[in-house]
Length: 423
Ligand code: EPU
Image (tube, rainbow, N blue to C red; front, side, top):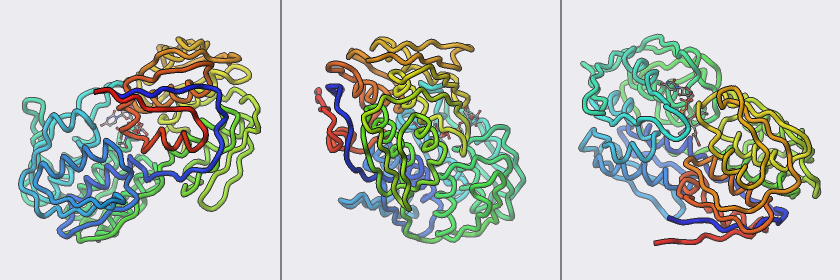
């Protein structure tokens, strides 16, 4: 398994381009199963999760052509099997999202249940209840969801118990080909949901209200081809800005959608950074200063994203003052805390491990570390960048799932980082 060797102490400086959004792209790839004609998707990041989704489509007989710029052309109507096997769903939960599109387009699907993961149990009950509300007949057998429908899915009103990004996306996709109108309430409002709705509408769907908590989908009989450009990855972009702030550096992120990061830029300003925002760029200058502690509570969009909690925690370890960081989305998303404490951080968990109290220390010390989740792993890279000495971050296949060319991008900013490949 590859590792990253990071020599701490460099102040990050320079410019980077944000990649396309992983969490948009994986869902849009699943949604391509709804089309009767070829679709082309561009600005797709070159990541393990994307390769897994392509592998899944190919395993079902779908023709997928990827060019050297990661433009992906998908011919869904070449499909031969409607099964998503355990081995692929296990490695990436988002592959569960093929269930709704398969069912809506072909009337049947057999998809492995994703199970829990490192950050919590992550149930899919709302995905299944939403599909049932549209008329799906669902049976659980040997760890698989076997779903079918007599005729077409039927439009319905469905209210989500909690804000769920994947659940909202899943039912939106299925409803696009249902007979009649679907009204979804208490929907998640993340930018990736708007990107998916734009993709569906470009194929001929009739989705409105995306970005609000009520989404209306007038079902259509079939969906055609389209070209779609995936939005910028707000989490990736913010990760580099936080790394810049933590190291006292100066970084400009290009090709971003600044409004998707409003809450994050305001928290970065609270840390003492000078943040300047243009039409499609964000410039952060910490002027060599030590960041100030920033308290936060994770919440569904437009609140503070859970996917950036670990990175802010890393910055808070060496900040001036004490920060309180509360996680409200996932049950078990503080595994980075123990690793950071091994590096000399002063963090204690309270409230049944839902809240971290971080007392800023002057400096972290290098140590071998690892994590079992993407954002926790990248937060350890940030901790390593500000630590004294050489840190080895193990198990970086998690980082490769979500950060395109992470070491090249950080090297461009002046970080001393290299990949140690192991056979
Ligand atoms: N939930 C349920 N029942 C469901 C679905 C969700 O109880 O049927 C609960 C979850 O257990 C969780 C909460 O609802 O407590 C929110 O989960 P959500 O469904 O919104 O998460 P997700 O769709 O599985 C996506 C991102 C995550 C991101 C979350 C929250 C993708 C592929 N994944 O997951 O991204 O953390 O939304 O914003 O879009 C990451 O990129 O590192 C990552 C984990």
